[in-house]
Amino acid sequence: MLEALDVSVVIGRKPILDDVSFAARPGEVTAIIGPNGSGKTTLLKSICGDIAHDGRVVINGQDLRRLKPWQAATLRAVLPQSTTLSFPFTVREVVALGTTAGRSGIDDPERLPEMALERVDLAGFAGRFYQELSGGEQQRVQLARVLCQVWRPVLDGAPRYLLLDEPVSSLDIKHQLAIMQIAREFAADGGGVVAVLHDLNLAAMASDRILVMRKGRAVAFGTPQEVLRDEVVNPVFECDLRVGGLPAGGTPFVLPQSSQR
Image 1 (cartoon, rainbow, N blue to C red):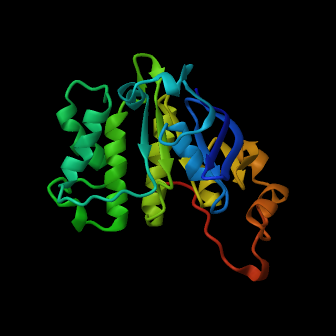
Image 2: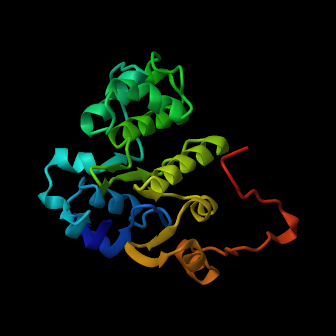
């Protein structure tokens, strides 16, 4: 599994994370939720090795600090919150970076960029320039790149992990559901997924476990049924939320049920 053990981060003199611990299991999607500034992205950067921290991060029993970058790249792939490219790369060139960063686990990695683009509903986009795409299309291109890195969720008997920071933030509802379906299928095939999400309904629908963050601390960790309760989410988000209740005055609300039609 992927474990964070008493992870703390101080930037300047400001504490950002305070002794956060949780475990992401293979075969499961773990969501991290919380208000802005609660430490979600900092925690994700810590567990992928992008930021200095106290405590330990352990991947499949191995301390992350003892892994060389290429070794870590074969075990986990990271989708950051945003990515900026200054040069005119084609979509295929961007996606193909994932085939060099990790081990895809297939015999013919040259086929992977097109396979990954089709997986994220961008078939036929390979020859277009990345900068010509919309924000949501660029986000899906980056996800295709990440998928190329760990195309097989289990390699040589070891589970691999997708670490996704707000993977649906720029997407319409169809593609939000499709991306979370990709995460579910990756987990179903034996990998593990950790995703920072803002949509509580989406987190409830797509995740097996949820870590709730507030002011750099872990407030709750468990199944959606265990943690998405009024007494947990109301103080965390500092507003009046009713879990499982109809809005006052008959205001309609939309809860996604499936990514399949």
